[in-house]
Image 1 (cartoon, helix red, strand yellow):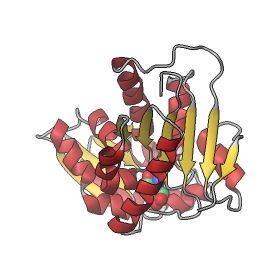
Image 2 (cartoon, helix red, strand yellow):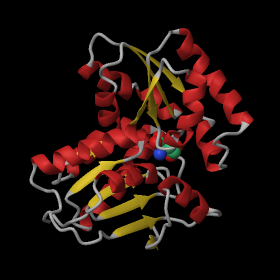
Image 3 (cartoon, rainbow, N blue to C red):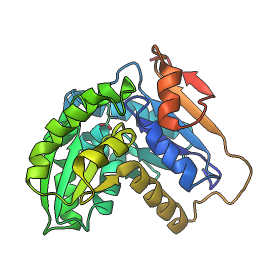
Image 4 (cartoon, rainbow, N blue to C red):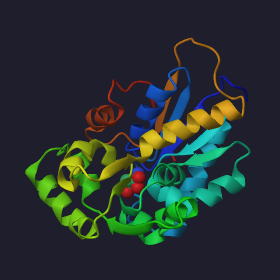
Length: 263
Ligand code: DGL
């Protein structure tokens, strides 16, 4: 393992490509190897035990690829299994919840939205309290957002009504900050911005993650010094219907070098 080794990024499916996209923009010379468990997604409604088991399997797969850094792009895995990964990894491990919590630390009244498993775990509230003990946190599970985003209904009236319904209790608490605690939500940013209003600042945990990764690579002397075009590899456990279209929507560019892993 050295500075030209890839960064390993993983998620329950293709949603974590929002994190890859942010990494590609912030760290354009880093090689990236991605793992998306497309055969077993969604994780957001599964039990802690099952998620921990799947997470271990994926982390081991990426460590065999000799990654220099592991990034848990999935908020649900970060919420319930981050420690499992830290315990087994010889390389640094970063997770989107820690990055999102740090980016939200200046908020006074902070809203957090995520999958039911993420919200039930209370992981965001704990992480935010570590950085901002005085802040008040209000959380809301938004189970319908993942399928709406995968359907591509990013500006659809149904999505707008759903967002109004989910955000109502948070807005009633007069939140000043809203943490997008799920891989899929960065795609809803324009709509959420409109529904939440201009007084609420949105924290995109994918962007926060890329910023934290850049800092850690510099601190540890692990940033890739070569300026040759990087290599991107994508490993998935299934190629479901509309994989290419949805994947490219998340990544914001053509998705190639896709390898199917049969487990
Ligand atoms: N990647 C998951 C997350 O960020 C969303 C999709 C799922 O439920 O697996 O929470």
